[in-house]
Length: 202
Image 1: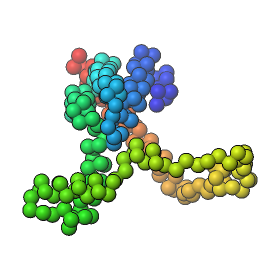
Image 2: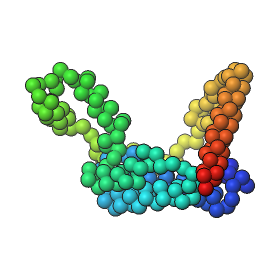
Image 3: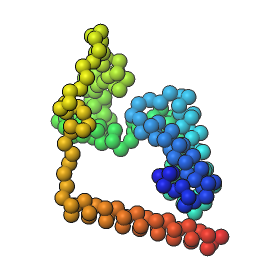
């Protein structure tokens, strides 16, 4: 995307855009990882979140601070400091627990909700549910045979050129290209209108 903007925007704006993407690449793995995050990584996450939102506000002043950006700037790091992770409490992890409870609902329905939670935790502890760290620790390690790996044969399906591609009719391909152009055009004019509105207010 940064290369696509080359020649269309000023060098200063393009550098800011590239820096924003670099910060986002640092933030995302920590934000989504469903495990306890080390303290030094938490501190780096907080600094990157602050730099990310501040750079957006300074380099692209027509952008509005959405609720998600506000949470990322003001609450995400604080939540991680207190609970050790954000990904552990994210939507996918919660939905996984919800599905687990629904699947075993008959075992987790005592008189009160607190007792139900206790039963869920007790069953998980007894089942010894493996974390990512434990799975990596106990993963089987392939032993080297000492002889070089056999090169892939000409007709081997592991080779990219031998894998069959997904075939589409010409109408489907043309429709997809048309829809992509229409989407990109609408997105461009929406962004242009927002920038022009901001400049008019200024």
